[in-house]
Image (cartoon, rainbow, N blue to C red):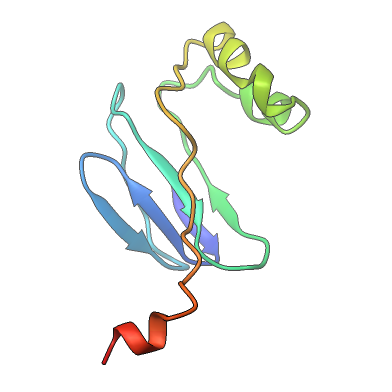
Length: 98
């Protein structure tokens, strides 16, 4: 995958951040996830080898979250946990730094 727009947090064997222009290789059968770290729209470019998952991504955008597990199963993909999320800073975040 390649981040085209926005900063992402990735997890794939380890957690790390990737900004625009960064490429990330996720080996087949590796549990992985990502989340947009910013408030705006984000764009990723994914290349899958071998292919075959092409139909999954347009469908997941049209499917409510409660249907994702079944949709993923139909495309030989497994959802193994809750989606990644970005934690909002606490009201005392600035004070916590001092």
